[in-house]
Every structure is written in C-alpha cells, then in structure tokens.
Image 1: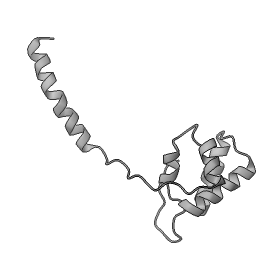
Image 2: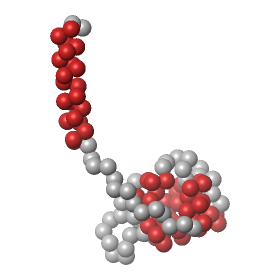
Image 3: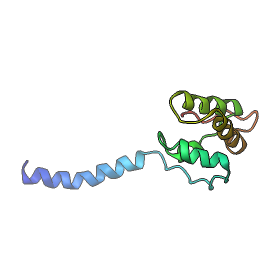
Image 4: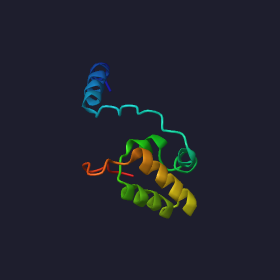
Length: 109
C-alpha cells in the first residue's frame, strides 16, 4: 500500500473506532455484592465453568423460571446434585426473582 493510503487509514481508523464505540450498548451497571450463603458458594463453585457469575446475577426470573433454568443447566452437564439444585434455586428465587405480577423477566441463560 502506498504511503498516502497508510496515512489516510491511520487518520480514519480512530474515527471509525470512536463511532463504533459510540454505537455500542452502554455497559451494564454494577450491582451490589450478592448476599452470602450456601447458594452463593455453590453458584461460585459450579456455574462459572460455562458463563460468568455476573451473568447469573444480572437476571431476574420468576421462581418457576429459576427452577427451570437451574434444572436445565444440570441437564446440560452442570455438575450439581439434586440437593444442590434445590439450594441454588432457593438462593436465586430469594434474591433474584421477579416481583409477582412484574413484567417479563430478563431472557437468556
């Protein structure tokens, strides 16, 4: 490539990059530290192999949705016992459930 082409690219790339950054969704707001408990310990030990723990705590789901989600993770290979599934589900429904009658929950896994 010619020197002029390189100069134009060097000038344009920061502008393109700045525009691309401006169009991205804002970063998620940091949430409070999850409450301590056996459920949190299990989530930290068992759930971080496939996704970040932050992804878990960003979600708000109904009690039934959390039960389905946790069981689904176990069905896909998460190494959790039936008792651990109950503990994790109880923790998530206690601290991260949607309010009854609230709108749709946050999707995703």
